[in-house]
Length: 257
Image (cartoon, rainbow, N blue to C red; front, top):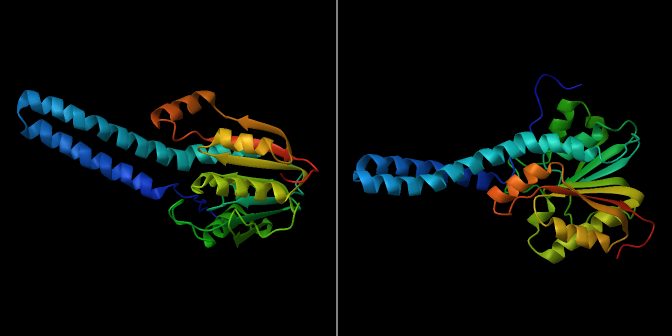
């Protein structure tokens, strides 16, 4: 088993997180300066106006940090538990990053294997390099069940029906073109075995994914929102741009549409 050092699964969208922090600090500093140096009445009102976006930016910074370090880690366990594990599964995690879902799946295996693929974009996750999930797997004690490869979600280098479980977390939305997102979904379905499970988690496009999956060789397609209250809160504070949810489906024995 791994030593006392704990795995680290990185910060998502690090550039955006940094931008919120810097903007919040700059606006807060400007607000303080206005309160101190501007004429009393005018300074108070202008200072408050500047302080409001400062508080929002710092709040979003804290929310995103918590989302990466706490909420996403906790939610990964609940998402993986949607599948009834036998321990012998062949698992694919598309866009594995530093290995959160990949390692979570590997911990549920005995004779199975978990394969992670990524294009290793540091813009999407901090310190996102192939060695990171391998090191995290070693720390957790599942390195013998984990394989990491470089591959694009739109062109997965695997035979049809290679995996019992295919997962992907906070990845597909990074494909800006809807056609590319559909191609990635089709690839995930293609490499899933008949009766296999697909667990697609993302922060936006939930209805787009459900609609697309219902048009493919899938059954039991459903949207899973782990906490409706938190879902409404995150949607409100992000103006609808951050709505984590999981699309669950099972592969049928029909051809992918």
